[in-house]
Length: 261
Image (cartoon, rainbow, N blue to C red):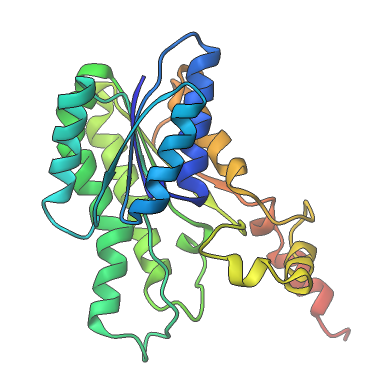
């Protein structure tokens, strides 16, 4: 299995790399992993850890916002691995600013990283994915279906990503390429550490989740590994929420907080 994972230096991305490698190992396959991120030092450490565990992992540092970087990633994967079976487009950014406060640069940066790069990278990998009848998995968010203040265009960028993947699934399905989204809920990653490293805030968030715990990157990575496998061979065009049931909580919460009449 030849896989590309973006945003692989930490959190969900590094967990996806490990999950894909171990899943391939259980199937008796060799996993070749191309790990991509702009945080070079952290990326090299994740790559080293995977190599120490016996997996074939290489790193490629760069900014997904650079227009030509996607084609560079695809060309590198072709040169080193000979093809691509799995593309995990996980790189994303989150900025704190309301719509009235955020700048045009911030707006465009979120759409560039959270939406456009998935299209550019998948498009660059398309010829190889067609040969392998491969799988594209993008990390969206439950924010794609719910406004998320105070993060400006974040929800809009993730909603666009979900629709992009549905379009991709429709257009590329005849080529045998499966395209799906995973939408995390409340997950403790480096991006959310400021919130969840506070025990009080973490406990408060957990009480809002039906499963009563904040998720960890492995919760998402295990689903990504499943979607990349032949066990999910008839699944495409899906946005799969992995949120501990939090999206089921709106009406119960409203009822609990309602004023009796």
